[in-house]
Each structure stands twice: as structure tokens, then as C-alpha cells.
Image 1: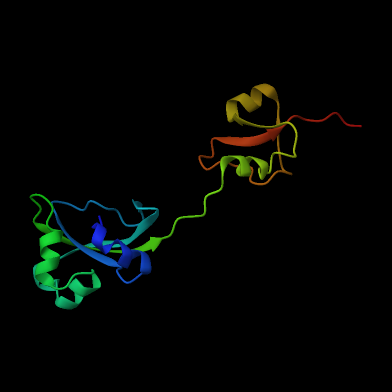
Image 2: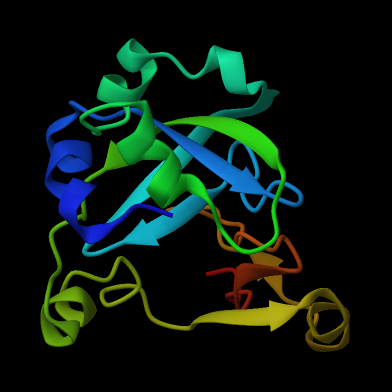
Length: 151
């Protein structure tokens, strides 16, 4: 979505919009798209008309002027003009796989498993309340522990 010469301006926050000429929108508001190491999150995308492209909008998009912008904005046979507003999300610091295993919350808790709900009923397991997050993002499985015998 962003040409290489504009990426530094996007990373610094100077460029927060882009004008594109497409047949239909190629991005969705709220979605994130990879850009180098980081990501771009699209805040909005709206159709605009050619008179809406002003020299000020061209400069906001990182171009010298309207003609410079229009040369880059055209993609294929597109005839509809779209204005996408976005913000840059820098990459998170990456840890080595070994470090993340050592820092795992389950490392010190014995007998913690992840199963589908059907398997839990079969094994008669109980939810692991003492471990961090009980639910996985897909909410189809949950962490469980084997019940301990009362002492």
C-alpha cells in the first residue's frame, strides 16, 4: 500500500493518509497490514472525487504535488478514488524462543493442559483458575488441571 520512498515518513508519523485509484477498496478499516518490520492500521477508507485531491492533501500523503500523487495512486484499471487514513504501529521487541519458554507462566505449574471442550468432558478435568489467562483467543479450548485428591 505504501511505496518504499514514503515508508520513513509513515514510520515517523508525518504521513497518515494515502490516496489510491482502484476498481474497489483494497483495504478494510480496522485491519492491519504489514509494512517492513511494523504494521499499518487503517483508520478509515472513503471514496473521494478528483477535485477533493488538493495540493495540501498531496503533501499530507508525502508527495510534492497533485500530479506526483496521481502518478503513484493509479493501480491497474481503477477509476474510483479512495482516501485511506491510517497510523503506524511499530514492531514489538522480539524475544528468543528459549527466553519465552523460561518465562512461560505454566513452567512452574505442573499438570496444566490445553484440550478441546469435548476432550475435557471425557477426562473430567477442572478449569485451572490459578493460572493466568484461562481462555485461548479462539475460545474453543481452555486450560485445565487434573483434580487433586482431597487430603
